Length: 170
Image 1 (cartoon, rainbow, N blue to C red):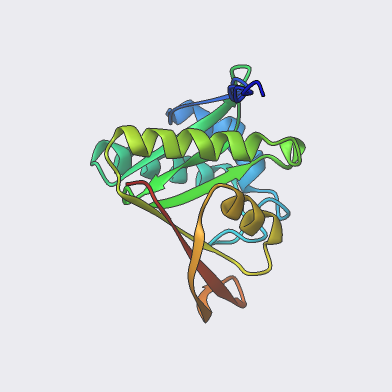
Image 2: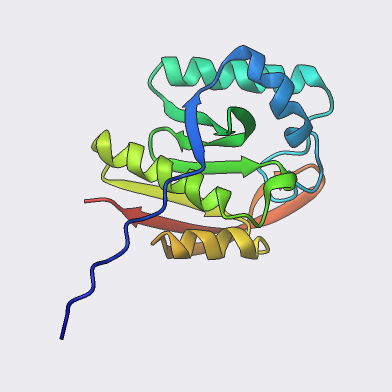
């Protein structure tokens, strides 16, 4: 019987690059969108100044070696962000316009590849247990649940629970 070769993975449609201050303009509609921010660790950005401050803080953290957050590009257009905080905790968000297209999986795959090349041994994730699409994506990418906790953070007036996950890279 002839052995079939595995098809190579299709090329990624998204790419990652470091944040630039001018990215705040493209990111603001995402960070101001209540739907996109529903399961984020803070409330939607009230104004552009909030997003600009976030972008500046992200750039400073990356320059200081505290993270590897990147903007997600599709055909050169900023559609979100993905990366690692403290070089270990994954975080990602895309514009709702691009949900359901497999782009978050591609972006997360690129983050994992970057982490492997940098010698990161494991990546952690924390997700709201109500965020079923995020949990499914993390599971597909090989993350396994390591624990759960109730009322782990207050976002606005709401206390939210957490699911903790991990992906071993070595």
